[in-house]
Length: 380
Image (tube, rainbow, N blue to C red; front, side):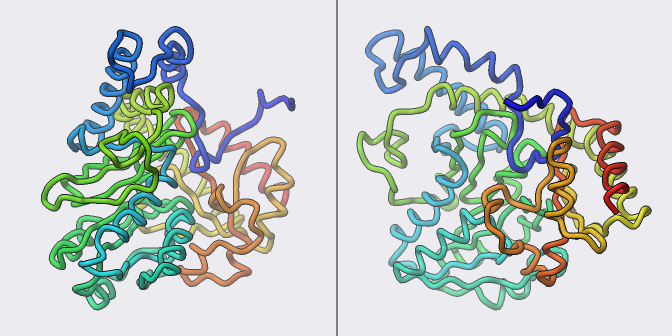
């Protein structure tokens, strides 16, 4: 196993390290507290159920919803699949039309391609050079048979935050649903489903200092009530939304991460944002790169930088043993095609191939940022 003790990690939008407090909290549920949360006729199973209920409450408190509105899944990809397919199947009498943005995560893009193959109609709205939705285009394209509008809260490649409240107003005037992938936003910024008007939301533990392989799906129960057809049958777990034995240790970890999230949000604003600002200033002043969506509302940790006269792949290979950065989404890292997000923002293929993503996390330092800048200067 290679030594990573001096490795600098700047790819937190791909995954975050598990917080030691989360890991410690999970540990008993791998060993002495190994009960099945559905086996509540004896203490071992009841203890597991109570721990799951507590985790559900922490997540509900974090996004300001009811405990019963949270369904546990294997992660945000499953959550988005469940939401889009489940709504497509359930709302056939309303219609089969979906609206979305061309900058969505592949979990959305690929799922929309699938529902299209099943008879759905999908319209992608315009975004500007910063990746922001054109609200007039939304108004012009939403229809009486539009079942749902799908809009990511914060983009995983650029960090750009969409005007979700304004989108929700338009969507709800049409009696449609707003589905929101909030995976990158939760724990980096405040996410309140009531204030934002979100009807369906996906999140994942490993983006918020929790374990991999567990996530949650929020489904509004009233005003409007969201109904879905389940993807997975067998046992009726999670109020029939997602059958299968619950991943108790993972859920416990997600719940603990949700409990800690307010402190993470403070750290992103007070400690991480100044590092992002330092890196961006150094990149531009030293003519290393230009910053995409620099003046848009963005997550405190995310830098999408177009390098000057050098391909991103070249830079990443030169620094990969010392610093972890990426060209974009981890889910498409093995795909040589340029970022669909940047192309949708009007960038050329050449520009997209020169672009790197630097995503900071809690615990990163200015000292580490200086190492990155010095390495990039050497490569120029």
